[in-house]
Each structure stands twice: as structure tokens, then as C-alpha cells.
Length: 118
Image 1 (cartoon, rainbow, N blue to C red):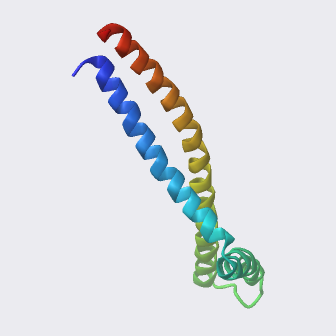
Image 2 (image 1 turned 60 degrees about the horizontal axis):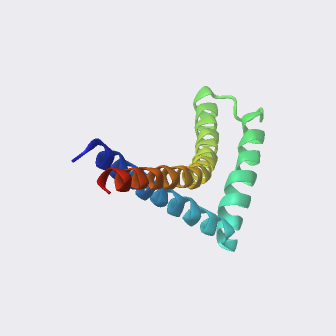
């Protein structure tokens, strides 16, 4: 396999991986548009539960170190899920840009291959 063919194959694989990432990002977008998801995850968990835990952390009734650590861990879980969602969406956007760049580079390589072969 020539270097040119190898580069073309790597770009094609990159395009396929980017398409998979876009589909995951799109799946999350569809999920986030679901009314039940909005109610249970967005409203109840990511917002209301975070507020409840924050208030609980400041409560004089929850001053034991173990209880505060549990609350902090729960808050970290909420933050982690939010970060995961954000990362999936960002990676999907980046994958869309990568596909365009890979397809352009692939087309240039194909033209070079035709010129060399022709």
C-alpha cells in the first residue's frame, strides 16, 4: 500500500469515527428534547437536586464530616453528568468540522492519486 493510499485510508477512518461521534451527539440532542428527560434530568436532577444539596450542605443539621462528604460527592456527580453532556455536544460539533476537513483532504489526495496514476 502506498503512502498516498494509507493517508486516504486514515482519512476515511477518521470520517467514520467522526460520523459515530456525531450520531452520539445527535442522540443526546434528541434525548434532551424529550419532555420526560427535561423534567427528570434537567429540572429535577441537574437543577433542583443541585440546589437542594447546596442548601443542605450549609444546614446546621448537617455538620458531620461524613454527611458533608456524601453531599459533596452527590454534587460532584451532578457536575460530572453535566460535563459529560457538554463534552458529547462539543465533540459532536468538532466532529462535524473534522468531517469537512477530512473530506476536503481526501478529495485532494484522490486527485493527486489520479494524476500520478493517470
